[in-house]
Image 1 (cartoon, helix red, strand yellow):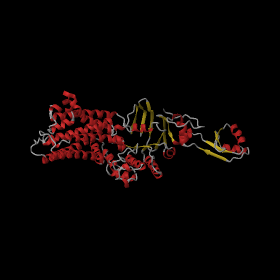
Image 2 (cartoon, rainbow over the protein chains, first blue to last red):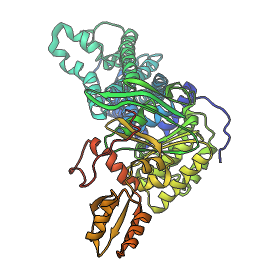
Image 3 (tube, rainbow over the protein chains, first blue to last red):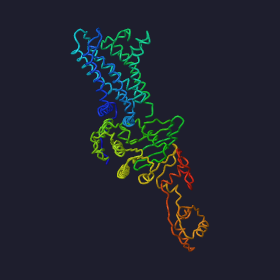
Image 4 (cartoon, rainbow over the protein chains, first blue to last red):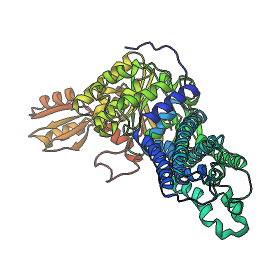
Length: 255
Length: 316
């Protein structure tokens, strides 16, 4: 009965293919992405229809008003990629198929980052188109390129932050709550911190997206004078640190 | 071949696996027995690299699981049938597993067919019965056509037909020269399937022996006797050094004399026998005796008239 199977490998490339299949064969992850796009586009349409933006705002910034909510969903998406494996105990099968846990995490990270970058880029591009069509010329247009690439990258990195926290905490609810706090608290408690506000609020991915989209919300008093791209690199930096920490814990922990 | 040496796993101050050393050889079904909490599942997770040993080591085909280059092609395991994402179809579940080890896609259809799941291949696993989930787990274990198979409670949730199927499957896999390790709490099932037995209690090895040796070495094979002239027969038997234990419905269990000797003795003295039944202990009785002193979560006291015997093959 032993069938002969030609020899193969179980490395990073195989991990990528496998993680991609996992992603596309479960509906809930796709729904999360669809919800994210719907939020961002819905708010762009709302802003376009009601002109609910500051006089000094840009079309680009106004169109991406929904990005803050979008980032929350992106973070939840990243959390779910990992926490769903723990919730369903599929993680056991994953690690039996590829016991090199660093490779597993790298494959998940790559698929999550790529999917989120693609969806966020398409969404923010469409949102900008909505704003361009619906908003009058009285608003400054803003410079969409390469800003939209930066916005998409920020979504992608935020999702990886969720993935890292999901790996560390293993429980969806706890990890999503953590990510929501990290994303929203700086803006909420920032005004209470006086001179520290620009440091605390300015480090959030929300601030990075506001700066990249040239929104009038990105006032130096609120989010610091650090430029748009350096803000993005700062977010990338601490997400990378969290991800490496999560990788070290994931490699050592019993599954 | 699975080899453990001094395998130990400690969780906090609880010793789940305590210095296990064993070799599980190819070509036979090795049954893994032990009460709940004895450390069977932990041992399997240690073999599969899911948990890291506190001390000691365990290897599959001479290498640690984590060092296998394509693990699913060397080891197939079913630990928990419910450990699948219910949102995925059976086919997709097997597909991502296959892709992770570069196993050709046709193997997915082959194992679905083999496990009798072809008709439900495109149904979501969340709607599966425990029996179907168990079949899917077995299909996943066979996916890479591995030489080593590890099944935790494989007959769990299967109906009679499913149990017969898995029994035949395990025997067939062993006959093909593969290494098969299966745990079960169903002694009767083990008695039918396993050639070799590994018995553990409280994380320690109680016995590593063949089924036959275990039963013959530990069972007190006795003879059940019923006679209308019992007092007379009793004196004769005791005169020959037999030990007697009262049984049910006027029967006595005679130890130390076989049925031929008892029958002969009765005939010589003109004593009528209404029953003379040689009996061999079942695996279950041997197992109960062996683990009696080791049961961690015991509901009641020791069974009456079953003194705990120690085994000669205690490797702990």
